[in-house]
Length: 273
Image (cartoon, rainbow, N blue to C red):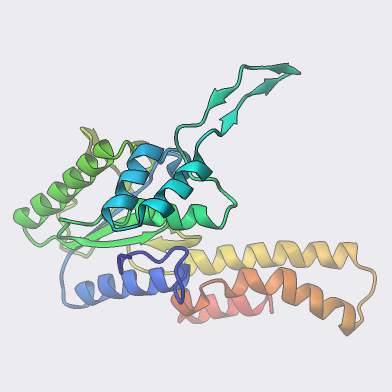
């Protein structure tokens, strides 16, 4: 499995993905380089994996015919229909997608997109279907190379019948000397962003996390207010378990990545503790 993949992998998580990727970005910025990050979005990724192409890949990586046949039998003969106001459509065969909620589904998806980064010269980071690229862009040649990588990804997607939701794909320019170069994907210009929610964490083009601190504190305080209004008891044995289960996760999710350093951000979070 590619070292770029952090989703559904042992000893990897959203947190390891964020730390590894943005540590690389930080090093480039600390060296005085300009950096461009491309955030990519697959349209209904898990639902659009074509079964024939998936099985082709499984055979190509060396899975035995017995295992491939078992997986094929597991995927085939699935049907679906739509109900609107009590009216049923006809049954249609499901020819794509890995069953979500299954144990095998995430593994099959990871195997299907495992070669996504082959031939890409920029830094690639993947969590399941969430994909991002970064590259130093100190020259026109650097910009051209990043654009070529986007072209390679578009070719990969077309070959394997996957589709990018181009409207949700964004570019973020970092560094005071950034050229703010435009990029396209499948002939459509990518929108520019100064802040993105990456795996649930708000990241801005200064690599600052004040907005993330504010958002985490706001979510935690909202839940805390519900507890205060809905629970009459103020006994420690009642409140603490609720606080630990419902409030702290909002404050601690990926905190090792975005842990605040500014005093105002620390105070913002401490008000919810």
